[in-house]
Image 1 (cartoon, rainbow, N blue to C red):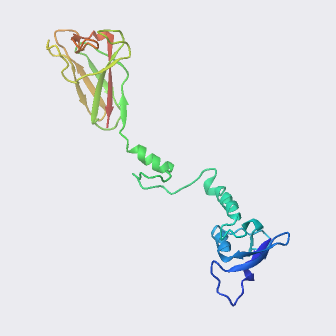
Image 2 (cartoon, rainbow, N blue to C red):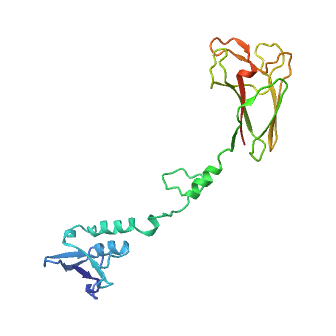
Length: 229
């Protein structure tokens, strides 16, 4: 059953509550309000194909005051619209937006681009008075550098895989002489020079279990360098 907009009396100025008589497929009569018609028109119209001015209703909408069951059909149609299927599109929010709005891939890319760039070296051999030149690929002088001693052979309570963050300059808790390394960063490399102190061990750290100072055995450890821009 359809109700034609042309059925509105030309001598009447209708409002949303103005009713138009209708009849369903089995002959039941009921009133359709202008508000109900407008509700469907606002959803893009639901013409039945017989007449572009027709709006389909069924008798289950009687008394629903502008909320016909056909609204669900319209919502279902919206869900399958081109903008919501295949490659859905949406408005890209302003950078830094922190609400429940949807984020597009463009928004996510901008947000990720603001994260610090990170570099981590492979484990490096520690040698007496040795030099390392590590190409970090960050494209700028790192703002933060963090050296780690990586244990590969158990020593003083440490087991393989343990990491100790060390002072990048002087690392001599027992005060037995200069130990440690120098770190010289530029926009391309991090250049490292290990100490050439009288002992052949480059670092002194604290025993993992007792807290007592000890000299590492260079061959039991590797150096890993992390850097951020």
